[in-house]
Image (tube, rainbow, N blue to C red; front, side, top):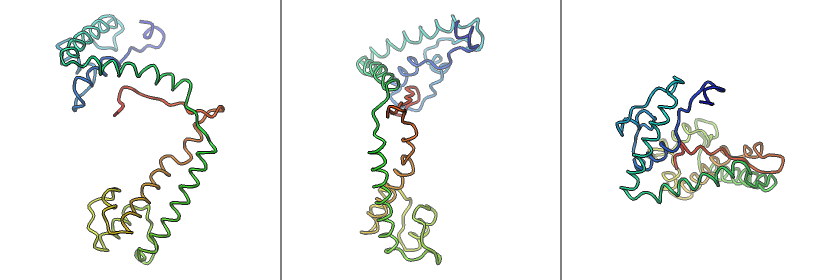
Length: 212
């Protein structure tokens, strides 16, 4: 009621119900909307947009949780649900307090990765002839796959596992190169700007929707 009074909004995502149903579904494809979960237990769920329904909706959620608790006990999954619930407090503390982060050490690692990329790139360019009269852009997936097919390397994709199976030294070098480029592009200097003045990183963990 206070949510509606001050923010004109009511809860739409119910963490406990969502997490319990994820456990019960065992990771299977399933629509985890509150209405769909409620339908599984034959419990009507009033529209959350109507403030008059907030109390009734909360009661419905409580009934769903009661049904889920019974199901968890039936399938002997109480310990799993306890472990999931126990993780919430330390994760929340990690968000608040942050994790120690050394900017200097990270910058050293960043420089080392750049040097490794440059070294491997030079080695690869010595193994690979010119591509259409130009030096091959190893970071361009279209160019790389086109060259591999032209050179009679019948690859179905450019995953590191696939490239590693190509004859040495080409295969292992390409696989390592793509791994380092991926790390450099996805992490690189991005973490540095998220460190607070104390040198700590504050994560944002969304328990609902996390894939792991």
